[in-house]
Image (cartoon, rainbow, N blue to C red; front, side, top):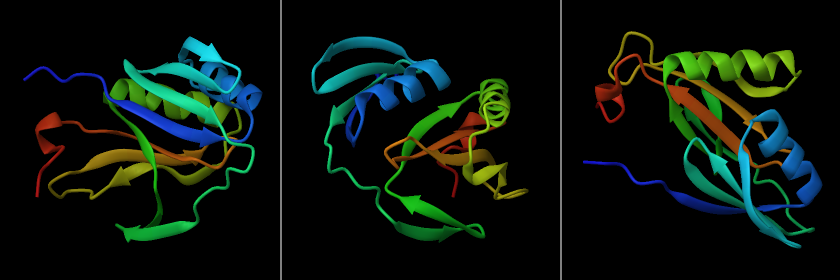
Length: 139
């Protein structure tokens, strides 16, 4: 099966800050835009930051492997090399991690590298990687 790109629209309180974060920090190519939204290419997936000046971050979490995982969140499953490069770039840029880069479910099915951080509007992002992609849906 060939995986097609997903599309995700989400609120941001400031498009200039969103452009700096997604375009500058994460390196997402900018696509179409208007006065109140911007398309970004997030590793081949279409994400759209929509302006909502009243946007407020969600504050709910669920416990996962000893960490409080923010709900909702979104992100991409990367290769381990790309995940490490992103983790290094974010750390060098002084990003504050909600959950620092680490290995989750170590030695278990579904072992994965993961990290969480937020954009300037408080949207939670998770980027993860698997040494073996057959473990993505392992139980």
